[in-house]
Image (cartoon, rainbow, N blue to C red; front, side):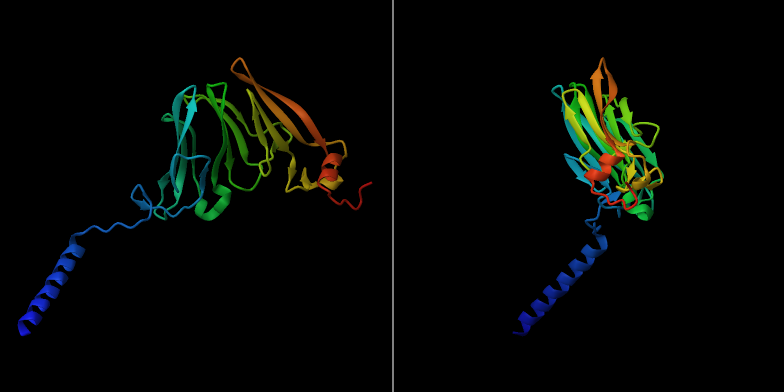
Length: 244
């Protein structure tokens, strides 16, 4: 009986020694994502539709164009010690077509999110998509790029009178070699040119649809449908007390 206790004690001591040696020599790794040796604290700030491979700092998206796989990569880069990125880069086949520095996601939150959506192959040679820079509304750009990263079309301001893409609704459609955008001058569904839309002239155009048709490797823009102040007030059932 005494011998059995001694053997058990020796066994316990050996287990303790093994655990001490293991703890002192093993390099523990946590499950948190690290980039450039820094623990990533940003989450859900990089949004890309249809990633083949992704995490909170990276997306790989493969698109088939004319029977060939094209590689698109979206990266948060240059992480600061606080775990947030300073930069974002987007590439196609290792050619960069978008880059931005000075990100402050930790301060700006969703206003600094980067959102890439609505991918579409055009004419079996180009890739169209939308890039939304934050979630404040009317911050979207339509891009069309070729397979070398050259920008064929970049459209943010539709005209010089504050007509921007209406990105808080269904704003884009594709048909054959034509892209249609829905755009607006109205902010938060009521403000137009710095004041209430109720004060605007009824025939002023506040929203419109625009088509971009590919011809001879160039996109031709045309306004195809307009929405006036009166149309907008009626369709959105806005109450204007002093309006006739």
